[in-house]
Image (cartoon, rainbow, N blue to C red; front, side, top):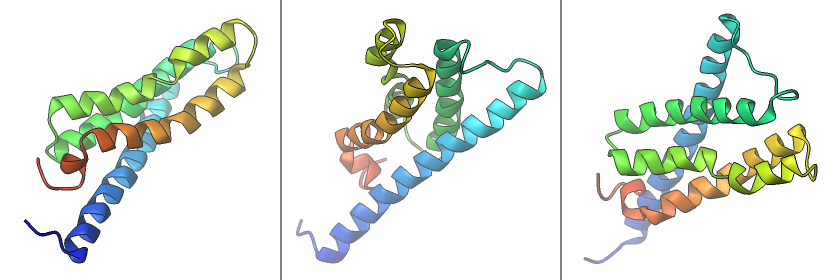
Length: 135
């Protein structure tokens, strides 16, 4: 099959749209579930319990993304890969926190920044699916 510039543009447009959708779904999950958690008195302090706070927040983001990915017709494997990306940054960061090399704020900042390229990496792993060619 010959790829035309218009086809290539649509592919990358779909890829970019999915990336933006994942970011929106991630933040919606984090905000909505975080507000519900706080409303029922189960909020977690980022300063006093940074590990737990991050894991809960990553779970909230994962729920938002998983719901949206399943609505969009993605299978469980890519959905769970995208969710795993929310937890992956803490693998090297928790030990740095425990050693005092970073504080709770640094943990949150670095982990949030790391999520974006990690999401892209997960998407490039399944380029055809996220570019709209297979799913």
